Amino acid sequence: MMDPYPPSPRLPTREEGARRSLRIVLADDHPVVRSGVRMLVESNIPASVVAEASTPEELFAALDRVAADLVLTDFSMPGGNVADGLSMLGRLRRRWPELPVLVLTMAGNAAVLQSILDTGVRGLLNKSDALTELTLAINAVAHRRNYLGTGIRRLLDATILEGGSARGPLSRRETEVLRLFTSGLTVSEIARRLERSVKTVSRQKMDGMAKLGLRSDLELYAYAREHGLLS
Image 1 (cartoon, one colour):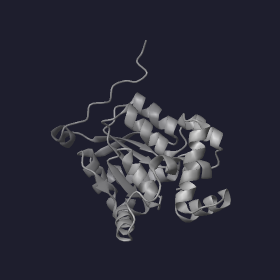
Image 2 (tube, helix red, strand yellow):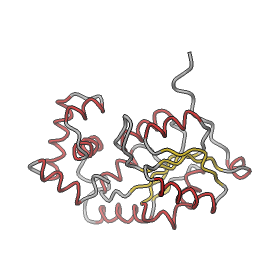
Image 3 (spheres, helix red, strand yellow):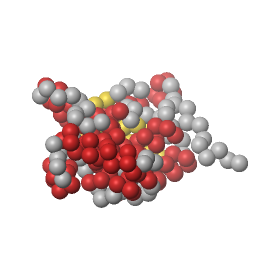
Image 4 (cartoon, one colour):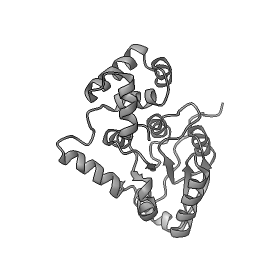
């Protein structure tokens, strides 16, 4: 029987990387964005996009099919069984733990950004900074160095200076539950997706809302829109 979880692809050494084009799998649900990112990457660094994906499941299928040196992915993509970005990144980490991942996002909430970093991604870049920083980020991540985009770093630093923490008031699991709930899923659906009990998910939702000072689902939806929890 074929192993459903093939071993992670061996990453190139720096010398090997210098001798050949970097193989990138690109994932974003907007074709225009994928086209623009691909053109930017392939025209500025020795790299080629060996596969594209528009959903999490397409991304996983591409990684099963082709050898890759780096994953460049949007954080929030609809479709498939892993609609939430944190779940997608967690699955990537479990299946391909040595494969460098660079995430592009429009999220502007410090707790969400820290939760993304907590999944073990090598790089995090705001989409608004991609034109000026993308090639720098790819080069850093491909050589096993971490990279935080200017906009991301400024937001996290500002949170710390304001007396908070980079993580913000929410735990990673609370952030995940609130993101899924405000995206339209019920508590029962979230429990099935995350393989947790309904009681646990309900408690994480209520704990998260309490930390944010929110008293109703309506206030939660408003907070999510205003603070980038949905991006």
